[in-house]
Length: 103
Image (tube, rainbow, N blue to C red):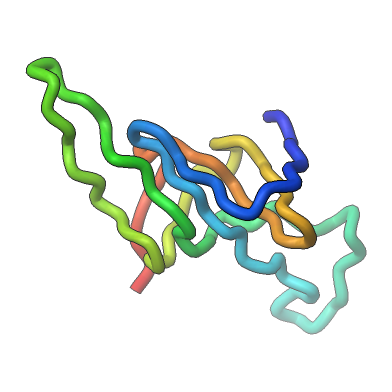
């Protein structure tokens, strides 16, 4: 998986792509032990920042996206492309890599 650093203000996904702001990773374990940066796991939860127009069907129409801006989602661990905008971290995913909407 590639990591990209961009210096733009907005990103508009194409097709069935979703732009997700990554949630902060856990700083300590459930038992209270603080984790060093090298031991932290990549978070799998984030908030949808932008969505594409949807995938094209065989007849040329667009299939509506199941997620919308502001949804908190759970996505596959090794999916997507990591993108850094300023100090914020994002992941650009295909909609099929989103496992669930977290309520």
